[in-house]
Length: 460
Image (tube, rainbow, N blue to C red; front, side, top):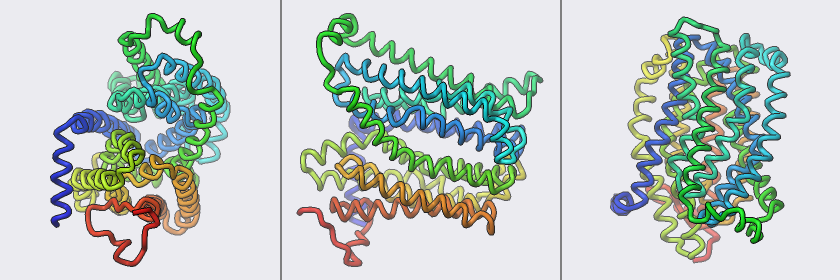
């Protein structure tokens, strides 16, 4: 208990300073984003039922895949290279490289979605999917552009603004548009979802571009940018930027396997109604872990700085404080999902309460995800990014296999178990290697690995 008290005292001190302000701003932005995604699912569930949520889940999965391929890791490369010197005029060159390449790839991805609409509907046996993909294909360029701008804003130390350019804000705007359209008596059925998402994506992306323009106008180099950029060679070459982007793409691919391919496999093996129950449970349980997303938007630069300075003890304390903060904030939502899962899911509609067991399972997995802290980013920020990439790829590949194995005999319950497997195993394996490679135990309590005789290879 004394160890937890010391961590709590240190955490309170940090929250009173600049980090606390950044956490509060980013927390609010992430909360808006998380609630926006949940709100859209609620709107679709209320208007179109579980089958509608299932079709939306498939369409969103295809959009996420198209966005991932369009960005090819360039959003993370922007965060890294812009963040190295965000006052440099060359940050716009990096952004131009990313936008040009992303725009070309996104047009190809959008065309594939447009042409392949009937094929995707037949593949997943999801009536109405083709109509939704009509609008979704139009959203791809703006959707990918928004994520690029998000990476740029993280690089210039504006994580809250960055959060508002990703999925949640687009979903929130799309939900409002669907409600307005339906209340006006112009119901277009499921097709409305796609067009609303497209319009929302473009509105959010254009707003982000306007924010970039406003930021640039406040920089001292803006008026002489042409002379500076032409006269001086950029510190990062296009080849280096591209190589880094590809490395990040492989890590993002592992996350895609968990978040999207699993849903796609579930959509192939489950009925639209069963998929709707699974998706609504997954979306609700994600709220438990959204505080970790906030922490991951603030802490990584500090992890890298402390490791570079050789302050491993301080790095360990910061990691444990982040894990403690996540567990405390997530506790009320976790309790609600475990004790009253049927009531929570009934907000989507009465028929969604059948997913109570699914929500309990995924909520417990999210508890592990939050309690272990930022173990993946600890490895990535301390020169162990290849190790984390391999952990993520292997665990998510096994998780994808689990979807194929568990869904046929158990249905939607099997999908929930497969998702929980990925969350738990990946975090526990990363926790093990954080201890083995860095000598850091991220959980606030006793070091269980040391107690059972597992030693760290980190130099003391």
